Length: 331
Image 1 (tube, rainbow, N blue to C red):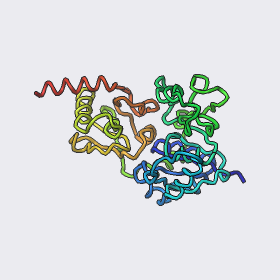
Image 2: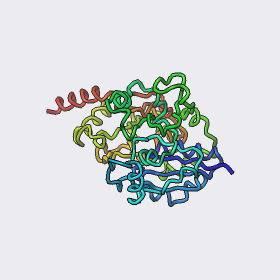
Image 3: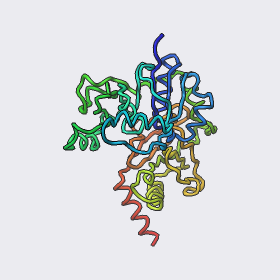
Image 4: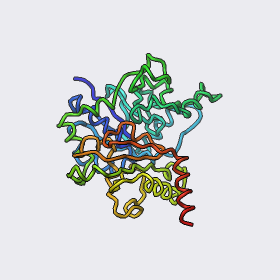
């Protein structure tokens, strides 16, 4: 009997991809959900994942107290992780392939501490094809690169393979380390049963059923700049107010990032605020029609988004200009 694959998910998007892959594998796979996914504990216990996963656990990475340095560092860190009760104790021989997108996480370091070979998955659709890979570039340029106990973003010796939407266009890793996996193609080819399974997991509130509701509407997809430490709440609110004012046509819908706890119902009275825990990609196949346009600021969320007639990407710099101009008009 084949061993189950283990999927370590830090975002709702990661879980969406893992769910469909596990279903196509015939179910019985394993998933570890980060506590960063809103409602992770309730979801793991709900039974909604049973069709795909025989094991569903939650990782409480906030219990981790920090990296231990010095002799036997990996051994001591592994023991400290397990003692803190972050998540299940890993038996690396119990799984076929271990897949993770955020190998820079507490769980990613634990895999390295355990010497467990893993496959790095794309964090977003086509993420390995991004032109901006400054974190990876800076890591490789560091003077102590070869001596670092942990390496991330696919550079760790424990990383056996890296999945890419298009390995022939990915220049980050040797070709022999790359494995082709197209999340875009998979999500575009879901069966009716797979779509229903995804809706059971991610959609808990009914969506408008009239196609005309969406035909002239705008979907705003904010990013959690406050959570990312890039600005304060007032600055973020001003940016999205300005962007919405410039680009909204017809009714306004809002689908925010799962980590963004902004009260958008208060910020945009009259707007329809969709579930923040739902991956935006789910909208590609669970709506009866398409939005007139979808707008985001400095986010790759629209890369695999097909639920709008027009996708608009606004850079953060341009959004700041819009906010400043709106502020000047109101003074």
